[in-house]
Image (cartoon, rainbow, N blue to C red; front, side, top):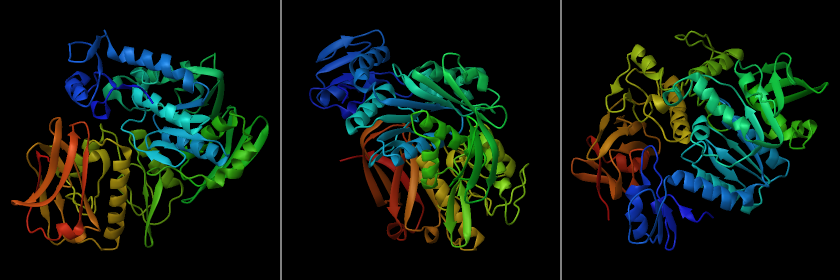
Amino acid sequence: MIELKTDSRKVKPGDTFIAIKNVNTDGHDFIESAIKNGATKIICEKGSYSVETVVVPNTKEYLNNYLYENYYPKIKDMKLIGVTGTNGKTTICYLVYQLLTLLGKKCAYIGTIGFYYGNTKRLLNNTTPDTDLLYDMLLEAKEYGCEYVVMEVSSHALDKNRVFGLEFDEVAFTNLTQDHLDYHKTLENYANAKRKLFEKTRGEKVAIINKDDPHHEKFMLNENNNITIGKNDADVLIKDYSLSHLHTKIEFSYEDKIYNTQINMVGSYNVYNYLTALMLVNKLGFSIDSIIDITKDLMAPAGRMEMIKYNTNSVFVDYAHTPDAVINVLKSANEYKKGKIIKGTEIEFDVDTLLLSVGLIPENELSTKAGIDKDIRTNGLIVSESMETSIRGVFACGNVLHVHDLVDFVTEEAKRAGRSVAKYLRNELDYSNYLHVKNGKSIKYVIPQKINIQAIEDNLTMLMRVDNIYHNKKIVVKCDETVIAQFNRKHLAPSEMEKVIISKSIIEKVKGDLVVSLEDGE
């Protein structure tokens, strides 16, 4: 794969290490570690070292140019499909990935839920990986024989030029709402960052655009082959759809022909997601009829209006990370409502349970107004092992507790919360004896903050962050001075969330509060 290494931990004897400055880390701090691991050449912006050293003005620019010149020729014949927008990227890309696979083509997916191709499924730290990792994955997909790569392209990635040198055969715009304004500052800057994707087209220059979004004109570049989707005066015209809690029926027209299909997903916004995916695949040379024939086999990604069943109760889990996405989820629930009404929001909806994963701006306001106890270390909510807050019957998960690295952690918490809600509705939650979990040396915080041993299902999962960068340490869980469990770690950093799992059989022996600390490893 790629000869240059940006992670000192991955350096092998004979490798070249290039020191890259990132938001949270500076590669120059790990040069000696890279040399210790066998690096024979260092590329950096300053300093002199015991091995061959090349000093350049900007290591990021050097790396980007190196990757483009040496590796882009090897991957440029693959069809690249890029999707951007605030909501819907993951679903659209995952649908395209499934459709092409079902059509007998080798395709790779890169995005929020990981890196997929064939039987490979790997988690990623970023929706769109850093340039070196991205090129490495494209080379891996090429080696496997992939003809197509579909990827989510975030505004951060576009602004930071993580897709340097790449040109896309097809691009798509979903929608634009307030998100990541802590980084972009204004909605205009946010839109301009996403627009950059539409300037990176090649070949047929296909651009699929949600015309019903008020910002759509910004993405309709004259040089692209623009195809719009919408309810009025669009190329792909949404004529009708009907919703249930199990599926969605869609009627649409394109090029004077009417089509009918049914998808195994709920919510009106998934009509746009599906039609965007359908058109992306269609413009690759596959007929709409052939795509509709396999639509019945499509599934939504985990955590996207995912139904979790517990006995006779059903709970929907959705990774709605923006105010607009939350509203979409509420509206979707309202569109096929059945059962009892849960009041307390501006929108009335009929479900047994509502789980909200909301953006960083409104979440604390919602929690404060609800009067829920907070953890001063995280500024998030205090929860038990069942994800229940200080108010009985109110459950929380995701960024409302602490900032997560991966959506998979959010989805895992949401599933646990969903199961707990179902138990609560059936009066099966145990409220007997609680013990507290405290952060010790070098640990900033631990989630959950309290546990009821009887309520643990099989294992206790704890998430935490450290207060600095450490090497060769172990995470130690103690009750008084007795070690309950310990976990070796070669590398820890504040930017990386740590996860430990302790079996219920071990926790059942505990008679007091737990303290989680960092100690010297073996």
